[in-house]
Image (cartoon, rainbow, N blue to C red):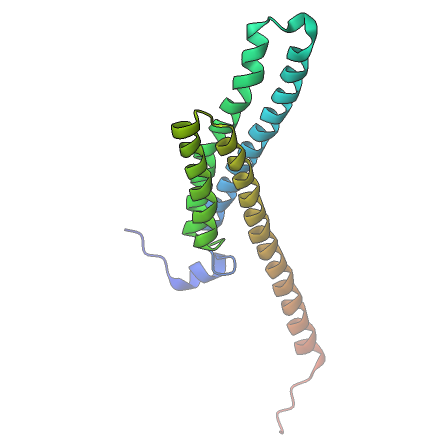
Length: 174
């Protein structure tokens, strides 16, 4: 087991977050961005293949109909494991309230499973997963803007301390 002194951990941590934690959160943010790109691809696929399938010449084309109908579902379904990983990272580092994470994941799961079991459809459940990825993007953005703002404030505090310590002579008589 490696022993690291508290001094080195405090020097390298960013506002109480270890460098490994910040790297893991950045990795989750990148994964969330991939999920958002998949959502955009699903929307574009729905619009493009739906438009092409609606043209009278392509009404009988089963391939276009399957691309229009199934491809957006598949692309959004690919985002589910990514958003669950993001939820675990956000929960682990408390970037959001646990109740918000449980509510967003829980409601989306209940709607998806309920729709598949009782209504034989997944569109409403998958539509609710769209919002989860965007909610987590807002959480990541807020966290990194906090780190950036705290870094700027610390630099300003250091500059202020350096200026005041240089400008004010220390009088040993008082």
